[in-house]
Image (cartoon, rainbow, N blue to C red; front, side, top):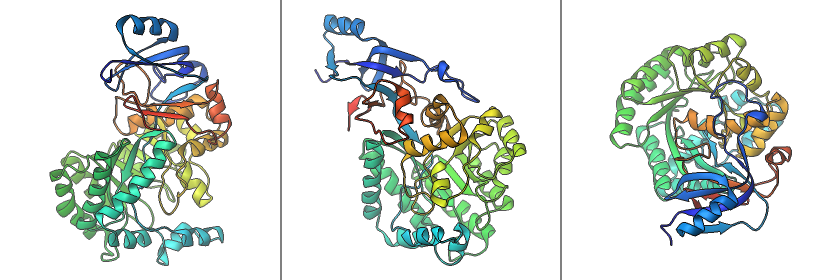
Length: 413
């Protein structure tokens, strides 16, 4: 029985996210919604979505397994959190207390807090300790309906410690149900041992990136371009080396100043993430170069700063993904559904646009073409909510969590 195809249903609504525009605005009327439907799964892959009674008759005739639901539920694709910093040690509640008293993020960093505080704790942690804490956070992601999650390094800032972080991410990924997508963010900021950005970037290029490739720890790199981090010159050196080694490149861009988006456009980055300070010219350039915009409402909430102009990005026909930026400093909450719902209210995004931002468009930001929608041939990563209308999920702005989570067709929550 275990190897036989499985029919699950009936769902009052299955919101497939299939057939949608990859860029620009999406009306709710464009959503493909199957009513009173079932979903047929074999070996973790979706085989068919159709009327439940019809599929049930077919399943009985062929001898398929049937899992019949006892209450009305709405089925969505599993959420994808495409920008996080979940691998770290320590916490930064002191930083938070200073921020709500009026200190800025950059002021706190300059006084010894911020990223370097997490770097100190992460360097002190063992590989096993990092993996154990990442496992706990990954489990919470699964409970919240996130079935794929990108995780960055960037709190090691030495070859040994960056490799340790990436090894921890891969270790949890190999022993966990959630899919973790590792990204090398060694170019986060300069480490305390090196105050010259160019020298540090050359060190990373020579000593770290080839080793990441050798150990097959990541296929993606990121760089933070902003005040107190890296500028255009260092970014060019880093990006050119990374691309020559076959890495995909994403960029922390325009969080506190306008610089990163120009570099993302110039070097045809896969995505530009943050974009809170981006202007119309920046967004037009990103759109023309097909750079995906990843907006991070968790950072805006955590820092008490304006949201990225997600609606303006869609006006400019960009592909817009939404992610939590879960990290120990600026975005410690880590609740993607709540953050996306609040962003939607402030930026006047349709529910379809918001949902696409945490499913199919988030998958595109990670170059994953086998998830983010419910359709034949896609992974059976699915989440079910106790309600009768998909709009109700966003109406409650994240307080309604999924009751059932399937990863590769298996119930995990």
